Length: 421
Ligand code: SUG
Image (tube, rainbow, N blue to C red; front, top):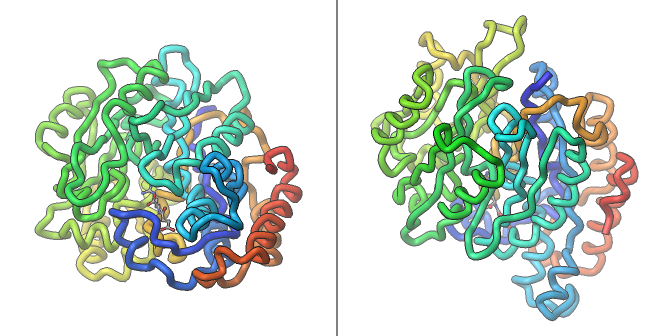
């Protein structure tokens, strides 16, 4: 049975605020503040627990090996000699944002009936540009079954940030869908992360039907205001597209192209008069997990919007959402979750997960979550993850040793030691 499985990135022991992402307002404004890798990871685990309770299928990915000495070696240095920027970039726990791990096209959409995954090259940001090697190793392990085809990254200079700039609309997850790739043209003062050429290459790798594939330009104003990924201003689930009025360069053209391919689509556009772009970015209401609740739990086929608590704390945004839920639309429930540690680096609930529509039985079971396994992970995190990290600790050899040992303990506990190194 094909179902949507959300794979969350377990937040690694080196989680810190180094201000490494220009164009990401939260990362810049929290630069050099105190982080808590332990709280961060436990918040992520609680989000997974809550999703299991909603009856959703849940998986996870391991944190990557940090600091990345192999990357530093290619840069002609080693951790102990590297300058503070390179140390922070080599140490980043940024692979937690699994929405940037890969782009996924489920089997019903592809020419060969396999579920295709292309690892994202993340080349726009130095600290993220060396994630793909570790991520690819993990995808090849988790999705080794013949039901999947896993692809290497799109070559330079075409930037690809994965599922954060990709949406799928379908009448039901296990039915054929249309796939929407959102790219940037110019971000004004901020870098564009997703390039059209990269999106087109991914669509070719995945053997998508051009008649069911759209390439949509993101609004420059959205990128320029801090929507460094499309998933900061839009989210889709089954037949619903929930987006801000200023998400796309040409909203009317975009909506009519989508409707032409999928007449049953329901587009919920939040007007700029109700929620400004700035407020959308500050509250992250679109960086939500829009999920279909299993039948029997609440209204059949109803959807829930899993939002960060920052959304609930933003009065104009929350009152707009409450009014929407009271109406007769497809979104029936708002579920706030506390992922503040990740949010302070610009990563909401949607950033932390990669959606894969597949038969859970075809995935390596070591990557599939249940309550007992999440308890085991939480126990390792509580015992090994640092409770607090000062920005100046990043270069400290004792911190480096602790980060390595913590990840090693987790890999051993989950029988995934083959991912070490
Ligand atoms: O790429 N933050 C990430 C946040 C990614 C959010 N993902 C999605 N929208 N899908 C980024 O900007 C901050 C790291 C630092 O500053 O230390 C960071 O990489």
